[in-house]
Length: 67
Ligand SMILES: [Zn+2]
Image 1 (cartoon, rainbow, N blue to C red):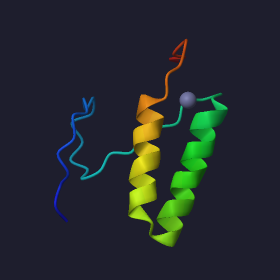
Image 2: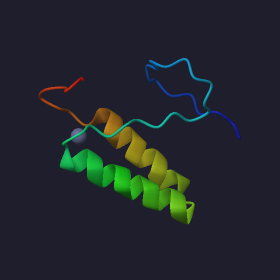
Image 3: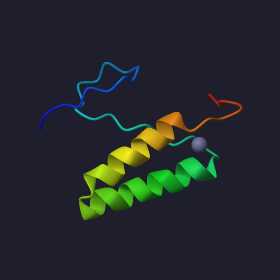
């Protein structure tokens, strides 16, 4: 599977071909996107899955909750 060149900043050096962003805890939008992404994976809809990943990455949050 060819890798798609995307202008993303990877934090983890994990050798995964397609790192998926974690939905922000407490964010309904992220949760919905994550659920849609899972559904897309189930149906094999890679385009939608990637789109959800992009939306999760770009979803703005006023305050980032760490741990
Ligand atoms: Zn969010």
